[in-house]
Image 1: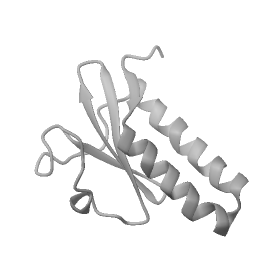
Image 2: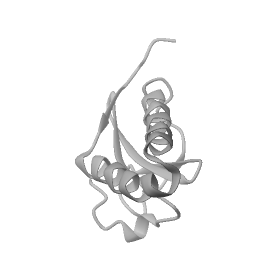
Image 3: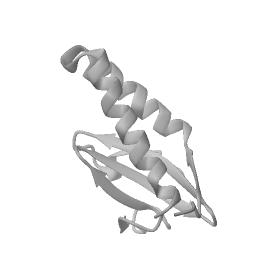
Length: 103
């Protein structure tokens, strides 16, 4: 199936991943941590074919959607033919606590 959308990653999301790697690598090993993050990024890239998944969270930000993947919550929005992965919250962090969810 041909992609219908393009997936982009926000700067906040890149910081989320870096923070998570710093936390996970000493516990699970650098290789396992990197493998986990690589699979997560691959999952996010799948939004190019099926973007309108997850639950809408308009009460937090208009157009915001969330979907769970293992122990992470992926927050994203759709802008025409672009899926913007806004944040990835690990280990039960709450979206309401993530004060910088981008608009």
